[in-house]
Length: 386
Image (spheres, rainbow, N blue to C red):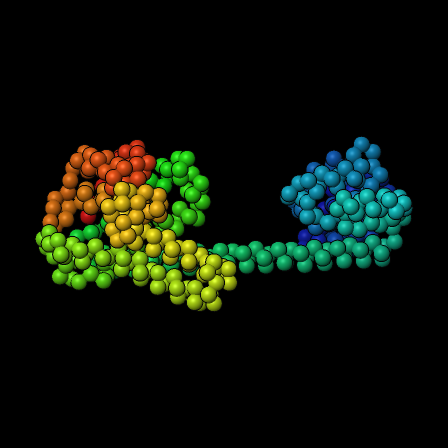
């Protein structure tokens, strides 16, 4: 018999790695095990660490404590430090009989302790019990892995359905205003560029470091004009410039959108039993956060930095950040796109108009971020051209 390895004709049985520096012990214990298990052997600590890395991987290790050079404690310590090997159960087999030695081994992660000379029935019973425990742990781990994968799959599926539903909802307004084309896609992409550019800015870094918050802003952006569903067709689809009176009616779309989303928020809160912070239902809390962001965008994207916007005449930082981002994205797209009442403005003229609006129409720092991203805006406009 080669003391370093012993092939088995029973590949379907559990594999036991027997580690001992004495040939006689390897022979005796190996003879006990081979009728039931696939046995591999190693006659030193370093050799055991080599064998354990080669197929077939052992299901359990019988490890002698007192070995020259690297003893069993050092071998176990090495095994437990390796993420690929730390879960292999180890039973110490030793001539030591002191309680403190047994406690030391168990504290280091050994699952059991068998003294020499071994009693065959006791050894087999201990091995059988530990293998059953390992199989149970492995089954549980496999089941948990499957359940985790299934949860992630269903969450991804639900997220996709939600995104498609939101896009369909946002498209209701877009389809009624047949001049806007890919406006939703373009403005959403502009907002994402601005957030990326502003992520390191002192005024915005804290807020935009929250990836979930940025995702909510980007996903809510297409809902900015949802209030247009409440605008009469005669005004919304008028193939000419609106009269001042008609424009006043058109301006109400911001308040309509905010009110509609506000009603949705109240419904979510009612479903949660009135928990304003959403603590009664985590999924509801996420819905509230998203709807609140969408409400800020729908109601505030026509507010102006100097307070001259609508519908509430908010000024400066009182305008929610998502609305300030959308304000610039929306105006840029309106200027650079053709409408039934105007031709598209050239890029240079569009940039000049937005620059003049710095500190008046738009947050100055957001304008600066835009000016540093003009080429990205142009690429997006070209990619989603009507």
